[in-house]
Image (cartoon, rainbow, N blue to C red):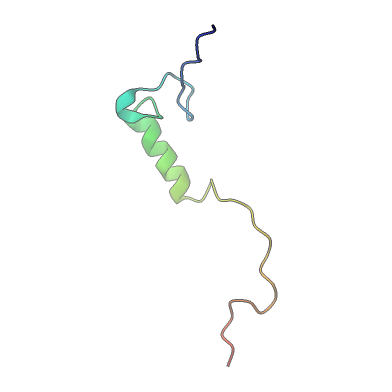
Length: 57
């Protein structure tokens, strides 16, 4: 039976550390949070239909 791959940090590729899983360090964990807050992980969506979301008076 083959040995499962060691999990790696999604930011830098180093081995994960259980205290910061799935990251290797607090630095990588914080870099990932900043990316989320800046909207770099936003999913694309179709444009809104015309008039949708506007006040209708």
